[in-house]
Length: 281
View (cartoon, helix red, strand yellow):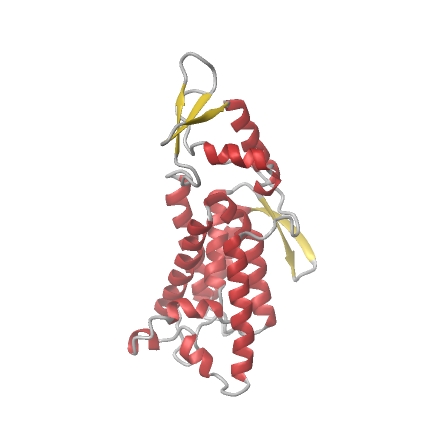
């Protein structure tokens, strides 16, 4: 159920962890620790084998397109990526479901890696990090909630609040300039830009234009000509009725307070309702 045009402030640690985000956080942190231990014995070997490099197509190391997303060069590198994963990922996963969220994440990461290989790959330095995937989450967030506000800390000190689409445009412009200027900062700007575009296009085409996918019960909504409201039916039998006023109220609550604010009853109503409503309101 999606309504464009709403805004929502992005509160600090306002969202509890969702299942897929939790798994990704644990996986990234675990691999980070393993990499630190391995680096102490065989420096560079772990990154050469699992980081993204030209060995992908020279020697058939195709797993690198996935494994490179779980490697990080240092504490700030993984901290930055995991914060974005937490802040944006929880809201996206609650909106589209865990399976679709993981599709956005890995499609963005893979296409971000391919963008780096095609545009600015350095044969001497493998590409590592989840930046392409998390920039894809930013792109998806913009496609789903373009008018929502996101507060970022400039230099981790100065808070600046921007609409999601404005933040994405600014970051995309910066990444494009740094990529074309060939700045020697050992940052995969092309992966960031490709991941951002991939996440936006994926979410826009699949969800903004196609409607959010049905989750939970398979239901359909039909209008009862003899009584107000929408009767909700499932394959087995009718499960009751959901009034348009209830749905509108829940949608308004999601837009203003986020999915985490819903009660168990409200979540149950959403599970019963279809993602599409036909006819006049």
